[in-house]
Image 1 (cartoon, rainbow, N blue to C red):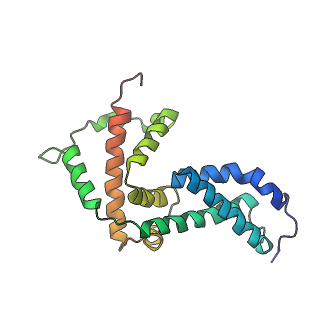
Image 2: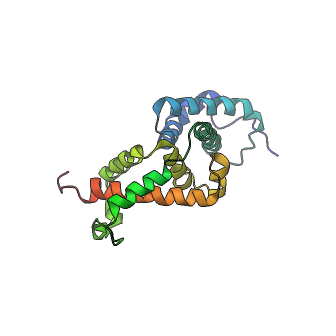
Length: 195
């Protein structure tokens, strides 16, 4: 086991070298500037305390990002304890009424989604996507971000958040994806060509 005695950069340089990228990483996941700053600060404190046990099997930035991921999950667990997921059924009922006609067919023209690669390349698309994510209930957005951004499995999400079963995770994710689809359809694919 190789214990860190000197790194290519000193502990004092970590904030300057990695602070911005860690902050952007945290902000993309928690969507709150103050919380992101606090999580990055907690990450650096934890890293300084654990620097003697860092085995240098990865780059310092990768190690710090791993610590930050755990801090984010811990934060989301704390937030989730304060929230419940009872409004998932209400959200689904609203989506069903807004998106489908009486015969169960889409009320929106999904044919316009024929070239998603081109849309994904556009910066404006991501601005709309972020607005759509912001409109999701926070507790449900957390599940989406853990799955889609962090790549956690349904079982890991159940451990991180108070969700009773993996089946509930899949139901919530399905409903959220439908809500995102509806929001993107209205704000991106059905918008005027100029804006």
